[in-house]
Image 1 (spheres, helix red, strand yellow):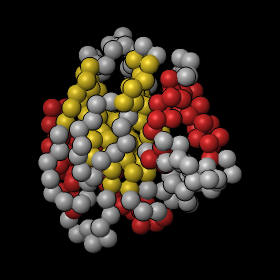
Image 2 (image 1 turned 180 degrees about the vertical axis):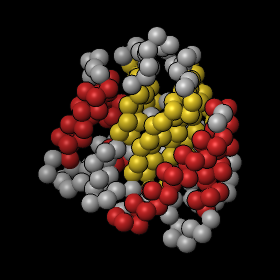
Image 3 (image 1 turned 60 degrees about the horizontal axis):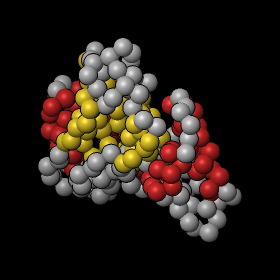
Image 4 (image 1 turned 60 degrees about the vertical axis):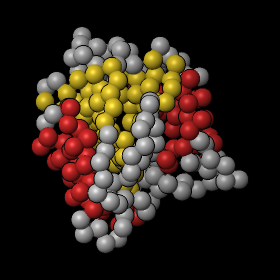
Length: 218
């Protein structure tokens, strides 16, 4: 994560729900600076607490709905947060996820990346509404690349954005690399695209690779 200012409004998180389930989250708060950072901290805490209290992969959407309700209360600044959150069953690769208005992650399988199927759901913090969860079964070697719009909307000197299409193209032209190297290469691509243009938004990326029940995800 590279913040555009001294403090940022993006956040990512990963933690174990129990010994067999890993939670991954990436999010982007509206606005910049201290107000965004404060709402970011609140959003991260509220979302994690709601997921931990639910303790059930099958009820992920309910946990997100409860977090949204809490973020909507007394939100006089009308700030909001886009969120992608998923729970991975480490033993069988079953991945349950909810999208709250966030950028579509990319799933790399057999060295080919494509966007994860996503249902449209509203951002969190705006209004009380239902959320839908989806699921996919990871295969050993599958890689999930998550990012915020600071990556896809990074602009060069002429104001041209990097775009989600370019993210997909760049990932598909990378050789098979470690998660650390993939994120490093994508950061280089964004910096090369931006050139001398100032960074206008927080840039955040998160990677997850599943190795099957013989090993732990990275």
